[in-house]
Length: 280
Figure 1 (cartoon, rainbow, N blue to C red):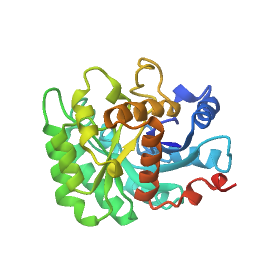
Figure 2: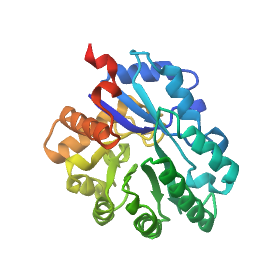
Figure 3: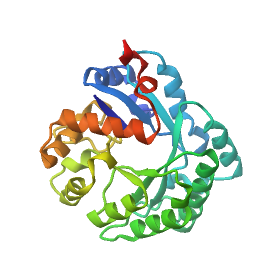
């Protein structure tokens, strides 16, 4: 049993074969995936809801849960109308988190002061919706600037909510992981943990307690070795589990099972609710 806790399958890169991608996931033992609701900006942040509704009740495909939120890349598109719309979408029964939100100082598609302001507003909205948050954090080259800002804002404006969150596609240091754990966050590892130069990520994966860990693909990005350079897909989350298993002297199946249970526990989902077909 495996869960891909973060993927973007709504894009055009999957329009031709999305059904096949999801069928391969099922055949690979992936029972659930979390469809991230960012889209191309606020107007399409219901993209995950649309996928969850389309594939609901079809046991040949993984169960789909979803999120809503404004990615830092599109922070300059945020406005009050978008906030109101996303609060409405957040009431959908398939929406279980707010995100991905945060800071991206690598690409700077939106000015940093705008990113910070929108990040704060997104945390306010998530608190109103009583949803945990999913964090995107990427610093500029050879810097910890985004990490320092992101973790400081979470500590000041979010930790008191008690709702927690997930640091998705973790790329920080062991120290960043420790700070996030202290703030009550889960740490999610993606395919880049398999890359040759990713030793700091592997070091963090050895330190993070197994009950605070999730795995993901971040599809279509960051396909793991041996699929690097290809379009990523949920079936490849097994390679993330395999790498972590090697680090922890456990099987990929054990990592898959433990992180799947973490997912259900964190989001308050009973196994029967998460996958009713499994009761048969």
